[in-house]
Each structure stands twice: as C-alpha cells, then as structure tokens.
Image (cartoon, rainbow, N blue to C red; front, side):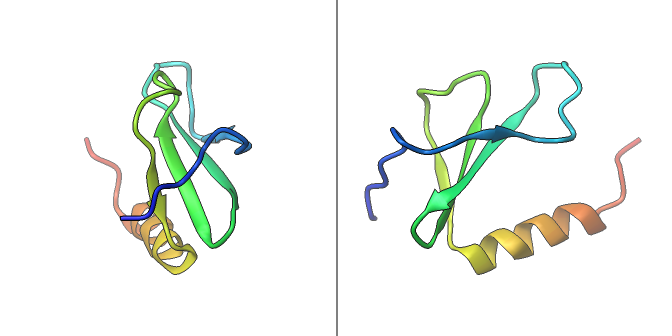
Length: 68
C-alpha cells in the first residue's frame, strides 16, 4: 500500500453537509488520487481512490435512492 501525505492537501466539505456532524471532506489535489476523510476527525484515517474509482463511487451514490 502506498503512503499518501495529506499535510498539504486542500480539503472541501460535502455540499450535502447540513450541520448534523455527519460530514465528509474531499481533496482532489493529489497526483492521481482523490482523498476522503471524516470532517470530525481531520487527523484520522484518509481513504484514497484513483480518479476512475472515485467517479464510479460518486455515480453510485447519486443513483442510490434515499433511505426512508
């Protein structure tokens, strides 16, 4: 597994964030990687995706009906 430094990444919070504390942040300024982390734990673990996997993940989320 490749170690990815997140120290200089620019993180942005999800546009779906509604103040409930259940938010994620995304960083797309890694070479060939997209970072994802829990906004409540910025020093915690970070998931990384290659760009095509990230696109598939986002498309999957967008096509999933909301839970009731």
